[in-house]
Image 1 (spheres, rainbow, N blue to C red):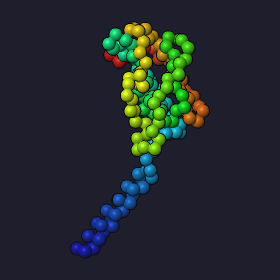
Image 2: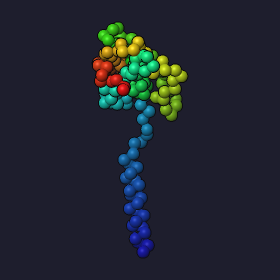
Image 3: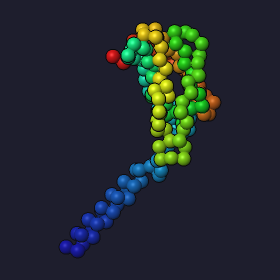
Image 4: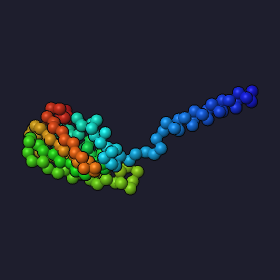
Amino acid sequence: MGRVKSSRRSYLLGLVALSALAMPASAENFTTAAEVKPILTATKPQWVAVRLYDGKDLLYFTNLLSWRCGLSGIQYAVNGGEMTVFEPEPCYENTATPNALKAESLDAILVSFPPETVRTIDVSVTFDDGSTEAAHYERKAVEIQ
């Protein structure tokens, strides 16, 4: 009986050791281009969203802002106009959640326009490693109903 308990204990300890190897050594904070670029590449169709609300077109940058710590710049243009810098809130690097949004106003996450005027959106992001990615959106592709 003692041998069975010892064997079972060894087996369980082995499983615990193997599961520990499968876990990452440390959690990533997603504060560099190397960490956020794969995420933003995968979520490119959702970088922005448009919604008609309360008599205004609202252009949201929420997805980009969620990964802003690996970015050094965000620019956008509406309807083929001039690129405009969108200023995100800072990255809270010395906290447990550096990408947290602590916005005190909607201006920190969106830009408003007259109703039904946003037809196309161009977005360019610059990563903190100097590389850039751009995207073009038609309103119907990113419109929140």
